[in-house]
Each structure stands twice: as structure tokens, then as C-alpha cells.
Length: 169
Image 1 (cartoon, one colour):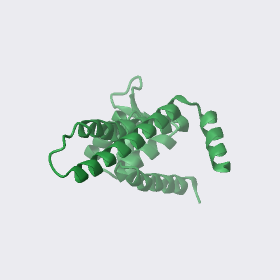
Image 2: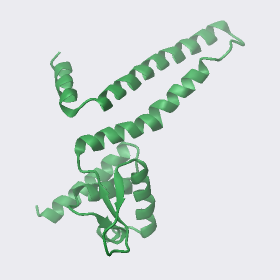
Image 3: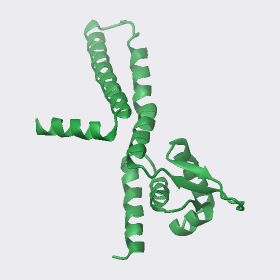
């Protein structure tokens, strides 16, 4: 396999994985391209490599910037915008976890806290079952939230040592 073939295979695979992580395929492909690029790339270079429109590049690069995975950089003497992705895999993983926590865990915690204030207005058994489910889910979600916070504060070695200890048990 040539280097170009390997790069294309990686970009295609990363884009496909992205759909399983809740982002669109093109966003994943742009992130993959910027992640493996040795130098910052312009919008035009991204368009040419991935064969996608300027609007598609702009929309997905903006979203990657919102996720904190890509930054805009400026080159002296250039009028174009250039983009670069974080290269440290641990920082990328932590940023993705942080963003998913903000988008997925925190809203459910807020919803469950709101639901805890539900007043009984009918069948007592139905009310109890609902409130038990809410309490159970809230307890679980808060534990997940605390675990995610702990992982985000940890360094790479601590996480892998603890994961290995869990696996060995």
C-alpha cells in the first residue's frame, strides 16, 4: 500500500467511525485529514483532497473548531485561512469526552433534576415507579459524570494503569 492509499484509507475509516460517535462522516474525514497533515491546510486544500464543496468544508471546520479539535492559523503573507488539528491523541480524546459530556451528560442531569420535582397526581404505584426510575437513572448518570471528570483530570498513564487493573480483576 502506498502512503497516499494509506492516508485515504485512514481518512475514510475515521469518517465512518465519526458517524458512530455522533458526528457526520465529512466532519470526521476533515478531522482525519487535518490530524495526519504535517502542515496546516487551507480550505481549498481540504476541498481538493476530499472532493467536497467550500460550504461543506466551512460548515464542518466551524463545527470542529466549536468542538475544540481544530484551530484556525495564519501564515505570514497569505490571505487564506489555514487549519490545523490537535496532534496529541490524549488531548484529542479528552476534548471529545469533554464535549460529549457537555452535550449529552449535562443535559440529562438537568432533565432528571427537573423531573425529581414531579408531583403525584394520579396512580400512586405509577408515580412511585416513575420516580424510582428517575432516581436510579440520576444516580447512575451522576456517577458517570464524576467518573468522566476524574478521567479528564487524570494523565494518560493513570488512566491506563487503572483500566488494566480493572481488566485484570
